[in-house]
Image 1: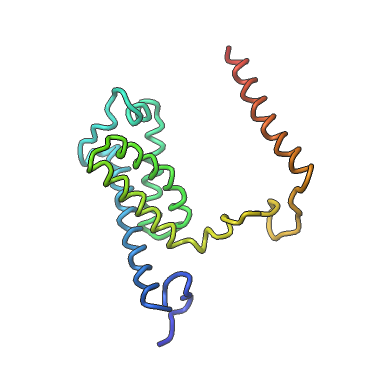
Image 2: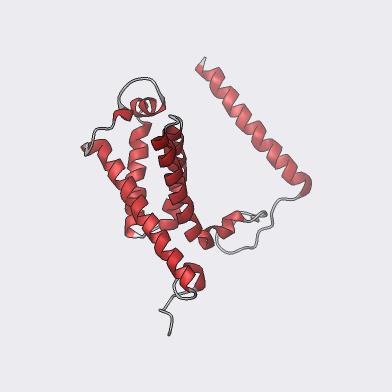
Length: 187
């Protein structure tokens, strides 16, 4: 049987039945996760269900809601959810979902209830499975030596030796300097 055009072993189409099964499972995770993010992102404005966690009061989530950061998080949930459901920019959406995933897991898991710990485990597992499904797209980012930053194709050499040490020290000194200057200007 011929493989479909564009099918490769790395994307799970064609090849072994195991790869095909994983692709189907990863897609199921992707569409469930996308729906979860879209539903909860839209709930922030449309109130499909009552969410006590964003009410004023003590705690991390109410503080995020009060400061306006939750609005940004919920917009990101909508964009990420749509990207996953439409299967467009999925690899980027999965990476963008990790900080939100970890915050959801932390907030739910910190209650130390069976439900909260279960939600934490499920959302981390979903994001991990989706990430594994797109590992071939991330492999270049996981290189120990990433090489020099360039615009376009190669050509530049990475910083080496004492130049690298001086550049790293300069980066730390500049960050500390900007921080102390900001603190001095604010007081």
